Length: 384
Image (cartoon, rainbow, N blue to C red; front, top):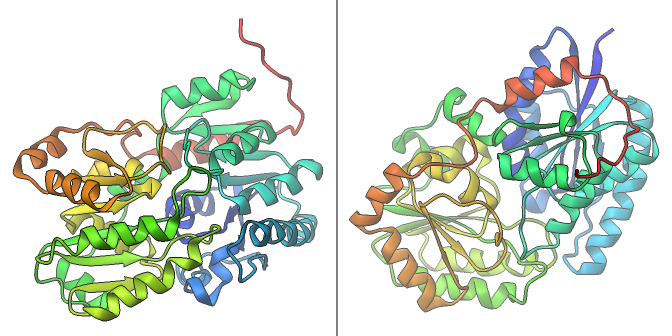
């Protein structure tokens, strides 16, 4: 009998990172893939990206509605409560041998809590990392303590997970799973990307994603307006800008970016979700990636493309030389972006070493899932 591996995804970005792992589980002679979809995937407001999962050839075994049309802190907490109710039913019906989750989102926390109580072992990807500007930081560490297997992206993160009391034999440094796209995914040409977006990319362009900062003192509207002000100082560059995540404060940003795009539709393209193929194609072709997404820290350096990381959201992450950090202020963003676009910094990007691996994580993870004995019980490992 095959080992049932349930993979959970609640956001478009997370699914893009999990894609090749899901393909490898699907192709395994030992594993049976189950797919649980929730959160932003099921929301028309964020593009109903569950349809992409379906069109990619993955059967969706459970859809769990949980996302309220509210981005207040109370609304997020209530969404988590709805999620737990739905995940209890889904996990009871599917009864996987192991649940795979990635990262630090509140949707993931909800399903991991359910799995813990239901004695379903959890395999966690991207534990041990630090993002001091978001409550995701505490969520990530909480998921670590509720998980049995750990697949981390760098040795420093492996040591941190072990420091949290996890047995070294259950903590695997496989690199960042999203980098598998570098070796395994086809990318679109500039012409193909332009046609797909219905947006003419006949000049240099910037790829922009800004998410609310949920813990630090960084007002999402004021910070996003500062970003737009800075972008106005680069009229020779076109802009592709994606929607924020469904964090508290995120919905206040959406009308601002839509209004910004409508002012100059020939220069700015706003889109709820690019999907991983268009996103990675855009990264490879962009002159810089601007915002505060974790992708700008983890995946973008592998393309030798500069990242301008704004504000406190990603504070604490390992970062390649190709990443420049700045405050969420218009002048600071402008100055940092000008440095990122310089010929001198292009040379820095070419030689930058990405600390998150080389792009072979999915095979390694699937191999461990095939052979490792699963047990929801574990002992705290004291440091010697």
